[in-house]
Image 1 (cartoon, rainbow over the protein chains, first blue to last red):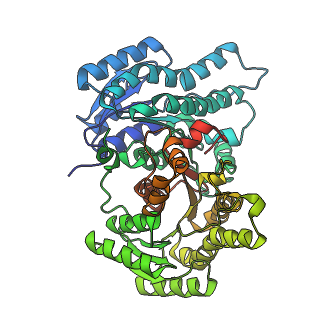
Image 2: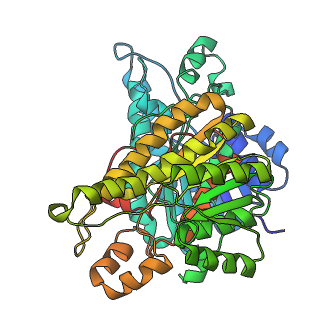
Image 3: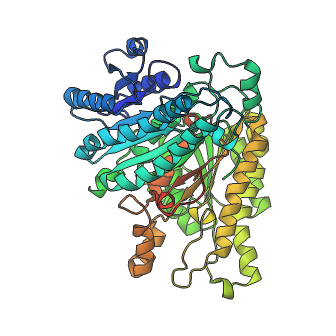
Length: 245
Length: 275
């Protein structure tokens, strides 16, 4: 039986674990072939998916790495239909301790990567007149905490970039949207004090710690044909944390 | 790109299996499309409309698409009638899981000509039609351990719009802005009961009702076809698929959101951070 993502090639960054892994597994279940990109070897995720997965070890903050990723997608599949820019970092540092290096690294991974992905993959999408970008922002932009100025700048930047890119590529049948998760229970957040996560999810309408699987339905929807008429939008998937318009 | 290609969508079978869904305003355009789609997705669908002729047309379409709809003539702004409709549906189908508040209406009049009675009547048509069915299903959703309410707002509730011809929209915009605020607050109050509440804000959508207006007026055509970034105007099916997503468990962690289905119209004109 044909599924919602049959015939699609979907690229997911940060696919080695956490949210990215859950997204890649879901898109593969929906019959997409998935390109797993991660700074570490995403072999564990690839093993969970099986033959529908292709792994690429790459640093998404570097433009030349994206040239390599795009060339691989083109050589292997001749196309790339879906890009989920999920990889992100969140080192905490108050302004007095925030180094130029941390600022630049956060902006590079969380935002530059989205630009590079579009630079190298829009041409592949244009060939078929169809494409989907889903870029991960953060619901924390509505509820900032100390020590996150660089992170806020990057995640607000994601929404700005999504809006702009949506305008540039609409005529090619490509949609671009942002998804805003709350704090999610992943290997990346496991070292945070439990009372910190709880202080966030207690503010939500849905009072439980978010899990990677909470993101997969919305991302499956936004990358499907069903969401054809939705572009340039920012969708919170945060249990109701974000409470303003 | 051909229209046919753009309108093709993913499989829906089984996405609402076991759910009882109430949809208001199913006698035309968007509500009709949603009711049919939810039924195709496996839900038991009870639909109402104030207009009996519209209901007949919907029943005929349901027969043609080989799905069952449980239809009733109800004014969604009539508290007593809505309450007895909801009680009846819940009794016959064993509960309620989904409420899709689609039915609405407005007086489109330039502000200088708008009377207080037109203002009040528009707010009744835009807001009472959301409050009253939500209130009626609330105890049933709590009894079920949760559910999903989807409210149809509009980008008119998010941004100002040019007056086309004599179609001023101050009351309509106020009502739809109210729907978005109501959604956000009700989501916060519903969380403890497992009730999710979300809005959809469509841009201009071409329905059988609006098609003639659009065809006859170059200004309306410009609004419907010129606003979206994507090079076509919106169709009821575009909104219906967003509704299916928000009604289903696929969006189980989304509440208080306003999902804009406008082909990028708001991304083009620029509004608040989230839209």
